[in-house]
Amino acid sequence: MESKLNLNQGLIDSARSAAKNIAENVQQFIDKNTTVTVERTVARLMGVDGVDEIDKPLPNVLVDNIKEGGGLSRGVAFWIGNAMVNTGLTPQEIAEKVSAGEIDITKLPIADEKKIMDAVYETAKMMVERIKNNRAKREDYLNTIGEGQKPYLYVIVATGNIYEDVLQAQAAARQGADVIAVIRTTAQSLLDYVPYGPTTEGFGGTFATQENFRIMRRALDEVGEEIGRYIRLCNYCSGLCMPEIAAMGAMERLDVMLNDALYGILFRDINMQRTLVDQYFSRIINGFAGIIINTGEDNYLTTADAVEEAHTVLASQLINEQFALKAGIPEEQMGLGHAFEMNPTLENGFLYELAQAQMAREIFPKAPLKYMPPTKFMTGNIFRGHLQDALFNFISIWTHQGIQLLGMPTEAIHTPHLQDRMLSIENAQYIFNNARNIGDEVEFKKDGMIQKRAQEVLAKAESLLKDIETEGIFDTIEKGKFGGVKRSFTGGKGLAGVVEKDEKYFNPFIDLMLGGVK
Image (cartoon, rainbow, N blue to C red; front, side):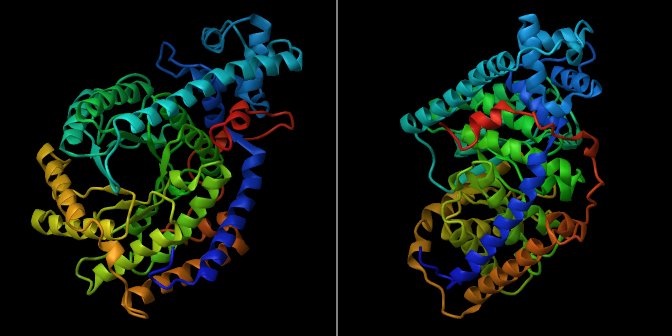
């Protein structure tokens, strides 16, 4: 693709090379460590589910028992496999007996290693097959009933009651939405466990639970078949349970997941060591399941200025791209995030926003970029807000974005009503239809304002990435170079859940899933 912005390909290559080296350096740390969340995910993928009498999830019960027995460095798969050989029970039955105090899993005799591995891999392959079948079912839907044109219209439901969310989601699909994001209840990202069962009350959203995923998936399949268009389901696997929620999404055929390498560190104060280990396994699962990940660079622009700090968004996109490649996610599943967040009183702000969006499109040509609407400068003036959203929609169709999170005229006032969502969908459909091919028709003035802006942002991002390559991602975050937020290497939530691996550690799902569908 020839650059309309006259971007320097050498600078893009240099920036990408620096990002690759940054990811390689962090990967060495990731490969040496596991976390309680990674191990709970392995337990879930081997079939452990449910809660005990005080609603503590059985994957937590099992992993806590192994951790207390000093065995977590070997990995939960080893201990489940050993217990299977010793007792002849399934992983679920073993977890139930551990919960009842009938088995202390690390105290069982150690069985023959080959028998343990055979038992583990036989069980693991059943789940891998289930996830492959889910992926095939999605492809079958896309091939038979089809889907909406890109940019996909992405809308949010957030009532706090999953059954009410279903009604709103189905209404949005009938109005024209292509992706339904079910917002998580406030602060779920800080829970070190995954709640169980359906949510009928929540603050700012519903819990991300496997049952809620199942309920919404069924509802969207029903409405998709009714209207003749596959509707994608999105949820969030950020936070302390990143890989667990990714696994639940893979089991229930979610299509899109918010999944950023740095978001939890910067915006939820989750320990950086914990997050970087967790994101790797979560992305292996998402990659294998055919789930599009959405990264969270738009959040930088809520804490830092969108004009001054635009280069940090590009630098983070390039880092997220390299972490995703490490986990086997193809570019076609990288919904790298960016946002229309400049102050609307800025003279020529639209031109700067256009430069930023076109630059992202050219640097990541295969990625279904996720473009975020204006929120920071929404005031409650619904008429101006609707105009801001229209300009945002215009840039999206012009620059061939992949996923368009629709802005709402009532942003900054309340959770959207059905009619607010309908107005936003109509706004986008009108502009997308009227300007469908504008990006194929219009070129930019050589050395004009738009070209110069994009070139400047690229140069600053390349310089920042070269600095990070020298000092490392951990030091960079400690210095507050992303979003103006500083975090400590040993601070934040969840560090106690990081465990160095034993030399005999193994995780069967990394072996079976890495690199996508086999």
